[in-house]
Structures are given as C-alpha cells and as structure tokens.
Length: 153
Image (cartoon, rainbow, N blue to C red; front, side, top):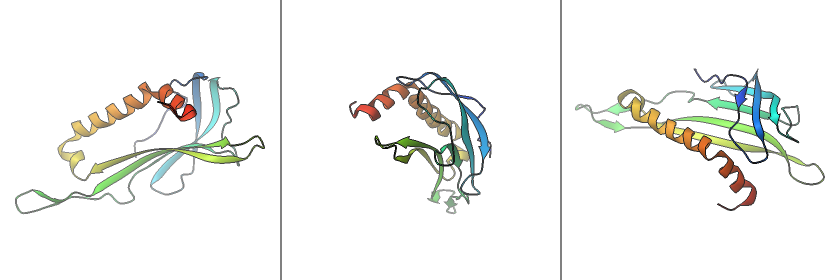
C-alpha cells in the first residue's frame, strides 16, 4: 500500500488557523487493510486544538478493499459485471460539544468507489477524477469550514 503521508502535513486554509501543520506518528489501524497515523504535534497557530490522546483521538486513516474485486468479461470481452472497489480516507477528531466539556468524535470521510477494471483500462481518467476532487477540497477548504460552522453556503 503506497498511502504514506509525509510528516508534517501542511493543513489547507481554514478561518482562524494560521499556517497549520500536523506531525504524524505511525499508529495501529483498526483493521489489517488500513494504515493509520496519530496527530501528535501541531504547528502554526491553532488555539485550543488538541493533539491525539487516549480520550481525545486525532487520527488519519486510509483503507483499501480487504479483497480486490474484479470485473467479469463475456466471450466478446465486454464487461458483464463491474463491482466497485471502495477506498476510504477517514480523519477522526475529538471535539468538545458543550460547556461541560463533553466530547464526541467527529468523522471526515472521503470514499472513492472505482469500478473494477477502470484502474487498468482508463487509469488517466481515474487519476483525473482524484486530482480534481482533492484539488477542489484543498481549494475550498476554508469555505467548507465556514459552511460547517455557520450552516450557510
């Protein structure tokens, strides 16, 4: 598995965060088909943000399918079935929910569903879709954050 983010990660722009960085330490993923890192140090100005702890998780994980699915072809070479191979990146972050300090874990999930065979026959379009998706997330990071906080587009 080649998913291996370099540490520290430079965070995308967000309102109230200045030059955010996140230092990673290898961690144990919840399943064998995943990799996980814990965020153990912060850089830049991130007032009030906590790194990972026993009761305050801050982790970044990536999961690949436990078993890769394959397409089935008929005698002419046309695909009869094209199941999806699903990959996920999940960020888990403990957040405080009330004045009493009650916490819950916030989840941010990107799910990538690739029709079996597309990675072989059309890798450039698969990569273009990923490039566009991640570029849009990075480009609109502060706007997404503002919308999540205010509930307004």
